[in-house]
Amino acid sequence: MSEVLNLAKELILRASVTPDDAGCQALLAQRLQRAGFACQSLRYGAVDNLWATHGSDGPVLVLLGHTDVVPPGPRAAWASDPFVPEVRDGVLYGRGAADMKGSVAAFVVALERFVAAHPRHPGTVALLLTSDEEGDAIDGVRRVAETLRERGQRIDWCITGEPSSKRKLGDLLRVGRRGTLSATLTVHGVQGHVAYPEKARNPIHLALPALAELAARRWDDGYESFPPTSLQLSNVHAGTGANNVIPGELQALFNLRYNPHWTAARLESECEAVLRAHGLDYSIAWHRGGEPFHTPEGPLRAAAREVLARFAGAAPEESTGGGTSDARFLAPLGAQCVEIGPVNASIHKVDEHVAVADLEALPDLYLALLERLLA
Image (cartoon, rainbow, N blue to C red; front, side):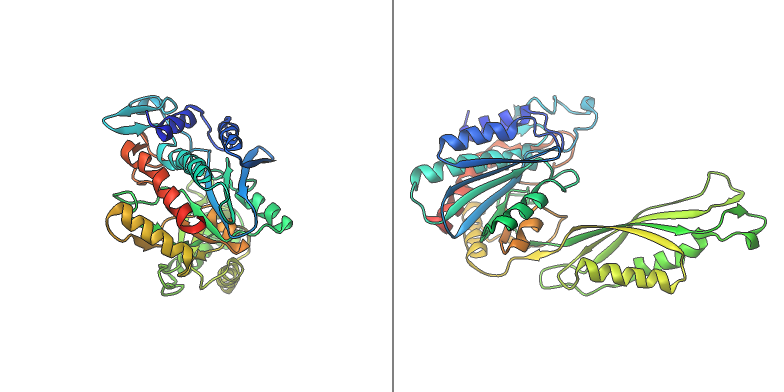
């Protein structure tokens, strides 16, 4: 059994459903300390974070990952226990195999090999892990980034191990992510009998034109490799369950995925201007999930493109698609960020898996990046 496969299995065995790390980071810290890394555990609330460094001064290259996983769902739906790793026909199955315990295992093996081959490498190489990526993302990398900022910690480059490949390892290079902004909107009306609408104010009737305007708006035409900003309504709820009662309020949830044309503050202002223009009596709670980031041409993007082309046999697609990642919290520190990881077809699904051949290639891929940038 290969070193990275064995370590990935050890991590999958630990049922680290967010935000429980279940001992993953302690296991990895022990290995990295033996390799000469300085390891610091940063626990905030119920969340474990690991900051491990080797070297000094700059440039600073951070490998970023998470040890938490999403719940497995009904275990009977899995072909094998989601927390008992199993290899079948050259494929490793288990919760977190692709997202992202396979990448984390590959990070650690690559780091061990790198410092063994280059004990006096220039700059600093670091590993940052959290157990709060799949959850609220409050006490994880977001909080660690605040600590690093207070310390004056410089970060030049960040490689996130999120499963980014589409069909073949290395066929996609993530060079940015959209921002995410969520809202919980409550439109206040006056409850009453449907036979006497003049004595009530129906929040459904009042809210729908405003919601339709927000949903239909074309916010922009995109930004470089970013798609246009999108607003999506995800839930609308009102009513008492009776068909003869005008409800007293309506609640709507919506989310904006936005490109660098916008900031969260500007989008909040634009949305509330629409709500006010429709004369709504409303309250709204905003959650800023993270601003967009984009890595321009430079040493990191060039190195990643070169290494992925070598591993995939063709130049990778360079994309800003998908959801969000924890890199959004390090980018504001000045870090250029890319995301490189295994095929993402099975993430968050029943029978999550990664090809063993891809898993065994990952340490070499990450090592090549480390050597290209720091050796």
